[in-house]
Amino acid sequence: MIALNADRTSPAQIDRAVAILRAGGLVAFPTETVYGLGGRALDPAALARIFAAKGRPAAHPLIAHVLGVSEARALAADWSRLADRLAEAFWPGPLTLVVPRAPCVPLELTGGGNSVGIRAPAHRIARALLQALGEPIAAPSANRYQTLSPTTAAHVAASLGDRVDLILDGGPCSAGIESTVIDLGGEAPVILRPGALDFPTLAAVAPTLVDTTPRALDRDAERPSPGMDRRHYAPRTPLVIAPSRSAALLDAARRVADGQRVALLLLESEADAPHSAYARVLGPDPGAYGRQLFAALHDLDAGGFDVIVAEPVPDTPPWRAIADRLRRAGVDGPLGAGR
Ligand code: TXA
Ligand code: MG
Image (cartoon, rainbow, N blue to C red; front, side, top):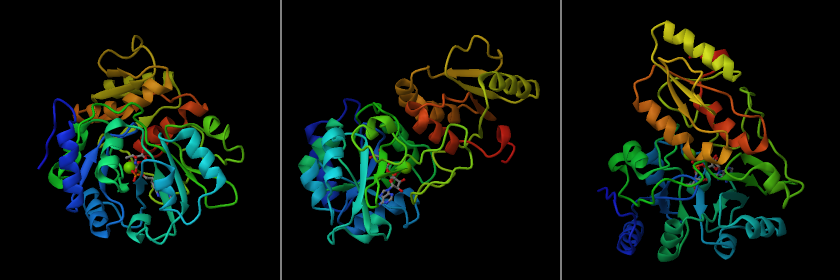
């Protein structure tokens, strides 16, 4: 039963969402990063439904969404001063804190481990839902396992179909890239997943923060977080990242000459692109690029192309999460030779 609401989410829809969640069902909802697939975080049966709907392995932990610090403390066995400082600076917002799990947190939420990832989302609809439900909501991104993250309600519907009981429509997500995940369980805080908040912004509050984010073209980088597989966030269409803009244009021209249908993903003007390749320009600003990235890949995936050739993004901190998502969307090897 999917209710996409052209007029966006009303109070009556929040009530309906709460009723579905209380009955053990699943509700997709917008956050400022991407859409989440929500179920009650402390209900193992609801958690099992989330894993089944996504087709995701049970060892991959889910994020518990809360309104703020007092709700987060209830889920944590230990809440440090650093956790307080980070939450104070960045919540509500795109930051997930991984902390020791309190006994009330089911192992189904944590992938069997003793830590729990917690975030307070900033989106008005996510907050209204949390407020009305009065308990934490587990929510991975609302897409099938290893496919592109959803930044609109239509993306959720296309990926999950009737595996979700209700989709709350908040329009396109404002960040478009998932939250930054920081592990606070060790000696020093560590970035487990680069995300919408970049390293310098976080390090200003957590000076000992360790950045594990690989540089832009470091394809072999391993991720320390469970659930961060090399192939993730991937379109069905093969995507190759060229080493430079000129290499991207040259590669596209060669492929066009070969008879391939080519889509180019560019930072700036397509004026110099081969005429028979389709060019999508996302702009030179990381905020705007990030906001559009998944939607552009969803579009290009539906466009019947043989290949997507991407210009590399700059190797600077505000671009690191985007470079990470592009790398995971891509095929291995120089210009995609591996797939
Ligand atoms: O922006 C976001 O974080 C979105 C919205 C819906 O909030 N959610 C999201 O969830 O991206 P998901 O499940 O697609 O990704 C969660 C990430 C995974 O990389 C997972 O491994 C990591 O967070 N994570 C969650 N709990 C963890 C834990 N206890 N230990 C280590 N990593 C954890
Ligand atoms: Mg995800």
